[in-house]
Length: 309
Image (cartoon, rainbow, N blue to C red; front, top):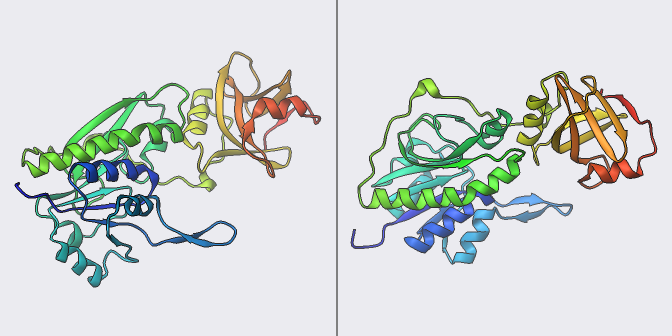
């Protein structure tokens, strides 16, 4: 193509920002679609999404914030832009009336090696399942979420002890690389999309606080992966001394406690699981900020052992 392609970028959180910046630097982004500004903080001041903030910094003039992607007025705006490419990262499910408009194709960059972990929380589930490798995948959009033909992938090892938050940030530059490469392949018409093998698919549903309570009767490795896969949000938790104890990070330790029991001694906070115990590293108790467990243990004056509720 002799002229610059018309690219529309759709996204919301911080995860999508490096890709927006990279595509804009390489090809220019004609318009950005993101969520409406939302009230946040004590004053409930309206604040824009991370993608909108970045778009304003980049000088992108057309920023659309539809309340519904099925709104005929919004769909007309997309058609009027006559996009060559729609790039979607961490956004909402697009109706066919939107994604079919792009002349060269509409694609999503998903934070897993599809068909593994289709769904809203692939990063969390990869760590919760104890995987040693993950990555990002670009694929063409269709009517069924996360099932489109694959254009390209990038892989990344999961380091032992890595949390979902750490993996989230590690995957951001890979998503940006993947997005730019996908745009290039579509523009140069060199993309060779490959179908996903549905037999290898696995789900990655959204994680909630209500389902983040720790089961100390499970294997020690399973519990550790569960804690790290939910860190920092929504964060795995348990009831300790009548209060909610959030646990952000834990390490394996040779000490042995009975499953569901805890001990504080010598500046160490230990928790018992099936087949082993964990040394709690980072925690949070009500009314306090996130802290190292050693800081709590050093100043602790309560019972030195007990059972998690």
